[in-house]
Image 1 (cartoon, rainbow, N blue to C red):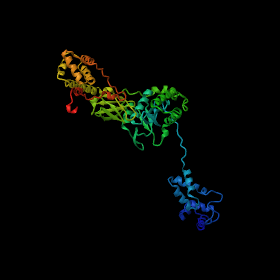
Image 2: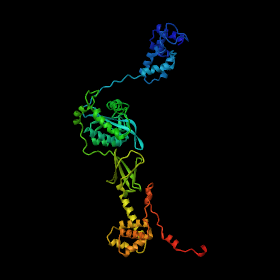
Image 3: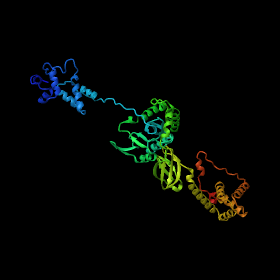
Image 4: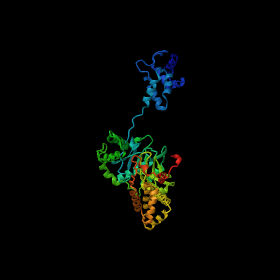
Length: 500
């Protein structure tokens, strides 16, 4: 502010008796500039003191800043800095920014403590715990928490996901634990509950609303960024973290859930509550009869997927494979996954039931699903053995007819005779069958006895089977038989004279 402006302001005020507002309008300056000019008993020097002696740089401008922010709350600190610079402020921008920030600091909010009637309200939320080892992998660990607002009765359940199916299943388990359903339940704006929200217009998740309709409760989402509206469950999650989870190693999913159930029943629901000064279990005795009854028919909360069985009669689900009956190979089936088990359907008929695996890259099989394949394999193997027997010698057909006429177990005797061929050679076996047929001795025992008698007469030891212990699957390999008579021919033939 120069001396000319200072003198002009004082003259208009002292001589012309104009008000401060009128002077500001007349000169086109801010009223605060007029006040500051009148506060100086003499003209301020061009580079004189930047503030009234003995007072801070911003002290004279605090009221101005406060008035401007009251009238226009969205004014920026930079805009206000430019305004007061025009009126003579010589301080820095950082001081103005700090002052504006303090003037804008919101006043602490006061909340009205509300108590609900028994059976009216519950609150629900997830707690993110971290991760936990599950077999050959790690899974995200979450904790579902529901608390009845009146009694503070707690239900908690640990899960390996926060999917809609797990969310609904946990609700069903909580209602079963309470023995009834509250009339209203408070939630955050979870995607499993609220798909979108514009002001008070809420689009709910349709599958969640199907569940809510089946259980007759009214979902009540909190306002946006108003987590205090479900403060009971928020404080309860803090209590779970400090009283149950703190210092507890998370090594096994099943063990954590088992310990949580004991803690819930023996400590959490039997403690003296800090607000009600009563135990939740005691207040629950009053609240439980006022809950709505459970639905007559349980609501299906399973995860449903359409899957196609492979040629190996396996279906893929979440990095694992599950077996189905071999007759269902290549068919499109319906998989319904629950938190702890899964069912596979072909139309309305259930064709497979498995324990759900949360590991990765596992094959979960039911041996009964492959009985058809094994039966077909045995039948094919029996046919192959019979064909091999008939090709052994021309008389084999007559011996086969004798086995049938003797009403013996044809497949069993042929399999044993086939093994004799592996052990003693096809030539020895063919000779024994001729002798057995001549004496009409039908059966694997007769054939084996003839072979042993023939070998004893030649003073030949009984051959010992070769067993491969390190690679046992090699023991079942079929090796093409070699006619040992070829070696006898080598010894019976005489070399030509020129080779001697």
